[in-house]
Length: 304
Length: 312
Image (cartoon, rainbow over all chains, first blue to last red):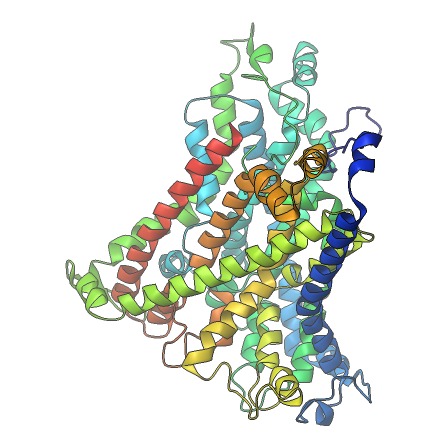
């Protein structure tokens, strides 16, 4: 970003003024030690709950089949293999699911960003009758019961011959990603100074042009973040893909359920390896998104 | 708490541009409305129309596999009330309360701990996010394996430590299946609670704590007198949102138990889905869904009111 007033959405912690030295001295030491012990205990206990399952996923994925089906299980593996990852890579059906996931999530991301940019801009920079109700509706729409909507959606897509197409998946994913994206982008447009828009208007730029060539580039980092969130949502979705996709367009989440669950004897090491593989893009996206995280999570949760 | 500081606080940012050009161009209101059209079209097609049409279907007898339907009035609703409604409502409430309260308490403890300024708190915050970030089906697979009756690591650990003597079929027994489902959802949700509450805690001025400590208030007293009033708003919104999400949660339950064993974990989301797509009985499914929707609407209304008050 070269512009000085680039509206990078910052979610920095508020600056915490250091307490005056007197107050600090007065704070009793035992109290501080006690709270430190309590804090570490909480982190350790919850850490076990949070991390042991992850550890077990990794151990199982690396275990030879024989070792995974031992009871009681070996908590520390004695033998490690990558065969389950190879099996996944060699499975053509799973590869197709993955390709579908990538295609659908990418198109969802692009479409979400485009549609949400316009909507977020409208909500941020204009005041008109019905704006508040619209915003409330958008916010509330992500809370409507999807299983109920699906009953009619299924019939509608069937009627238009769209059942089992990428289109059906992308349209559904995008709609339920939009509230979050709209709120993120609205927050970013709020940081674009009005003076900039007024200056552009005085220079004779049309409102479309102002949005496309002046505001959008400034909001680019936020648009990328919103796109990544949309990608993750599309990648993770289960219920829509389970219902609206067919064998050829199915994405990984329902694909894995169909492949592994309900078998007579689920191959757990293979499923854990597949789970790790499905998680990689999402985890990578979130590492990249750390900076936007708090803003993204609370977007739509708290109206600004 | 807001997502971004609202620097531009104008009644209408583009009031300027339109001035003097009126007549030549469309009004600002029209322009603003046009911007929302693509999004509104999607919402109309994917949310609003299906919602209304589904509610209408509740008054018909209809099979997913065949065309045609017949009007039956309130028969479906009568069937629902006479049948499984009470049980499904109970399961949904138990799941929702459990899977909201547990992540909240865990997330709060974690947020308080990380907010003490301990070493590595940024690292831990990132690490703890993993369970929330990974796809919902992966969470389900993982816990399905942990709870596995024959080879599961939970049974293994409990037997090894002598807490139980024989393996428990966690997902296969009505008595434990709901607990297992709640634990699974809790594991996936507590990181979000942690992030929300941590953001709330960071708005509580540290001097207030110092002052309270100087005045001799203990840790518990300080929490209720200083911390809690400071984060109450965020906590209320986080709790309500999590409650709403759990009230319509589908993925974990569907994959882990499919509503079983013997319907012990059958919530609205799972029951409506199974009725429609496994039982093909659209009338019954949408009648049940209509009641579900009604309950959700109340919650959403409360949420909109609450979040409005919070931002004032």
